Length: 147
Ligand code: SF4
Image (cartoon, rainbow, N blue to C red; front, side, top):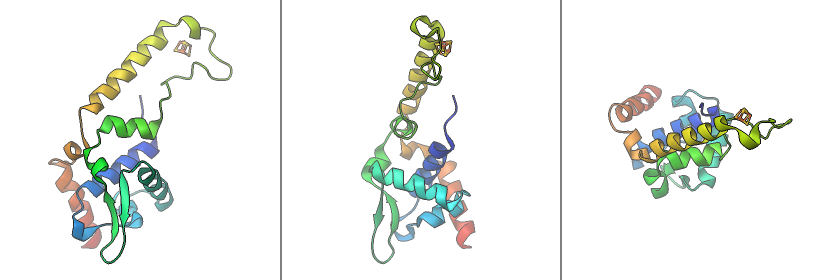
C-alpha cells in the first residue's frame, strides 16, 4: 500500500507545524520551502487541512499557520483516512469491473490488510510523530531556512 504524494506532503506540513512555537508561526510558502515541495502543492494540502479543521491561520502581527487542538490530538490513522478517502487498495469495481469481484478471497484479504494498516496508525498521534529525533530535525530544517 502506498500513500499518495498529497497525503505525504500534508503529513509533512502537519509535522512541521506541530513543532512551531507561537512566536514562529510559518506561512504556507515557508512550510513549502522547508519541506522542499512546490508551493502550489503545499497550498492545496494546507487548504485541505484547514477544511478538516486541523490547521487554521492566526491573523495579525506574528500570525501564520498553526495546528488546532484537533490537529495536535488527531491520530495519524484518522488523518490518513481523511486524506486518502476510503478507497479499496485495488480497483475491483473499475472500468471494466473485475469478473471475480463477487467471490474473490484476495479482495477480502486486502480489505483485512488495509484495516490492519489503519489500526496501527490509529495508535499514533501527531504529537507522537514529532518526538525525538523527528521534532528536533524538523526545527533544524526551519533554522537552516532562516540562518
Ligand atoms: S482479482 Fe479480486 S482483488 Fe483483484 S481486482 Fe479482481 S476482485 Fe479485486
